[in-house]
Image (tube, rainbow, N blue to C red; front, side, top):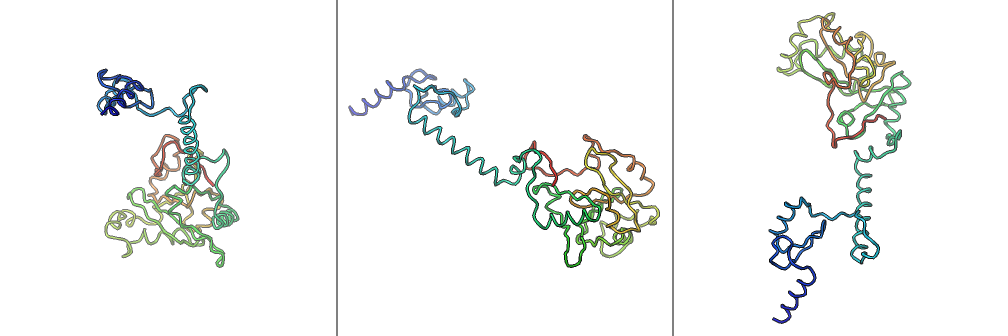
Length: 287
């Protein structure tokens, strides 16, 4: 009994009286502002009244004469926390890309370097988005060494029908008109819903349809350029910049001028597909 009384008295003499209720001996010290409290209710009241978050400022100035073993231990743990955070950032695919110095890019895998080189030999500047972008993850374009050809991942956007198709493993020597035949001519390979959406295209002849290649990087000039339907995919991509894979807009020729006269604008998302981003404020860079 006497021991308990001594311990209570020692607590009172060490922490004093609760700064909130001013009636009980204090049991807790706020890590942020060192306010003394006696209970959970008083802790909550203190945080609300003083607008205090209760989190210690790890970078606050501490005078030399006020330092003790707890201060040194806290600083050591703070440095360890920073080290773990840096290591986590280097492992995270998104943060690793952002943390690079200006002008630096993560190294491309060998097969993508070879693909980029072969595209360059054909007059096509091929660029890749960072790994966390959806377009990069879904891109199936590859260079086949034994065949000596590039097989492209191609996206077709039928703007007036509001429907999109993707072709994979497309031989670069195939003509545009041959690739489009399965979409512009009624056949059983398309589902009933897609066929219904493309009905207006099916009723139009090839001469009334235009194919436009999205040619620009955002804000760099004309957004579309008409493709030659009777020429191969390889020839249509020559002297062009392609980001990940070619995207073709298939439109009715009556509407072609509204596309060719359109210029990319940083604030215009009419024809831009929005990528899912893991964090806000990320910077976009190409390989």
